[in-house]
Length: 262
Image 1 (cartoon, rainbow, N blue to C red):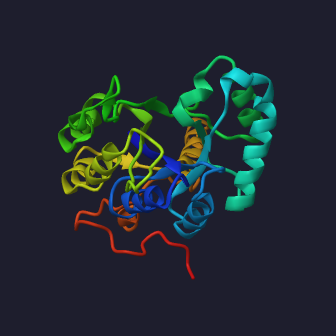
Image 2: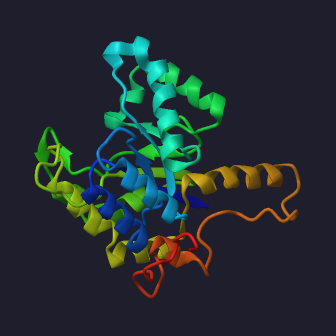
């Protein structure tokens, strides 16, 4: 079985990013996102995360490898801030500009997340790939994040087991603090494209979030111990709930699917 987690970075950086991320979840193939706890729209993002219960929300750490001595304190502060905002622990952890891969930072992140049982990008059972990105050498290449490119990636990058694709969908507002701008709206269009949604179904790829990945581990353990018929269901998007992630064969999922009951 091929399982795919589609994670949006930069949740909370601006309201436009928040809006795009929720749209990519509601109408497209996005299953997870990562919250930046110190950015201007973080409170709005956390509220949206609580509302859209089908969206796995992790933490997008901002750490300085040149001040590695402060990393443990920053981890403690940012995780505490996440819990304050979201009311729960993050489903996963990654970092802005992938700084957690820096050898001055990585041991601290792995130790901290290991203690609290939070999977870290590139160091969990989910194989991570980052080719869905619209810049090379500082130049824009929208073809890399177009529909045809993503369809090819489903064949070349999504292998047996769990794969994580990270992305940066959103709406860019005036004064947006990043050179990766127009690319975000192109990513959003691609993630919500009808061809992409149908390809997920046709290729037998099962969309999950990081929350479901934990359940998958439990189901696998039960199977390996001879308890496959003990009522442990494989996680993912059921036929009845498939539109909760926007990939229903009838097109875009109805607004409101996946929201918390009010």
